Image (cartoon, rainbow, N blue to C red; front, side, top):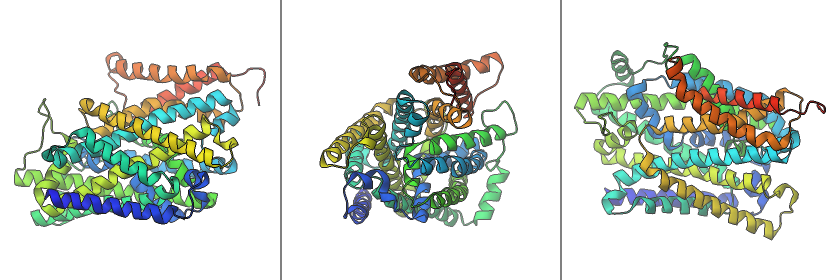
Length: 487
């Protein structure tokens, strides 16, 4: 079995390098790396964005989250659709009008260099942490279920993954990522669908019968109607909308792929198509979660628990996939490898782009051999940082990572939400040098509110803490606005 897994891993990696070679063989300059030469077909970008958005967190935590959270993740997905509409109608026209490569260059034009670098730094922290945790989950599962038995240390598996990703993005950058994301989306979906089919065959039931059984057991509940609950459905919808606006529309990784489309209209078609596909794909993964739980209950399969006796959601899918058959184990491994690559390749490219443009001034540099060499050193540096976060996080993995991921996003993307909202919906300037102070204070105050609000009022903040954070940033910018020199 281990030999088959290794062969599949190597074969998939070779396939990715073939795609890299085909997509970047005619160019190696900065324009291809940063902008994809603005030649990406929008259907390819739309389909590939599914895999980039899903990653290992959705692959494991969404199915596993059904055990305790049922289908209450769906209202968040409905909010995503509203967020994508805002991106298509508000943010993309701005980015194309200004012909941006790094989207944080807008903050420099609107407020000043300090604001630009503040926004870029918050993105770097947010994306480095968030994407590294997605990648960590993939490495963790593969280590626990495959490589640990071979005697490999955890850090060695992480090094192999990061080195491979560094190699195939080193030359082509976003031009390569657009095409590899398409490949990775396909394998992510195939793994989920194949596992559902295998469980249906094992239990000898149809999908409607399985979902009916899950509904009777209470696992398909979509709407949490308790307003004080963290997953109250209106909070989920509103949070989903702003999570998408911030984690996609104000995120260099996701927007950089959109900005490789030939025209604004193509980019808008890409975003709206992605939003519809995202509903379907998340339903598939929630159905997978219901199928996994039904299998465990029907067969008496013992689910992994933590030290407190709580079922570990992130281990439900891998443990059952490896138990079912060699086939489901193999498709799971391929899906996880695809999830791992899709979590990191675009992120490394986006981090490199942001640092080069917002801190090194690449928008004012010519595309010379020296600038290409500098860009490559930056790329290597971020790969090493990425690896460090993955290895350092392992002792802290105690809850479902999808919750951890959104907790981080609520605090780190809030200042970006406040900055862009203030820039787009007011005409006032701010004292640029004070923007970093506001951007730091807002998350700190938000953290304290989330910590003490249950003690004061009994109300528990969920993902909507992002909105509070953004509002505090907006109010802070109002406090430091230039009162005499409005635009």
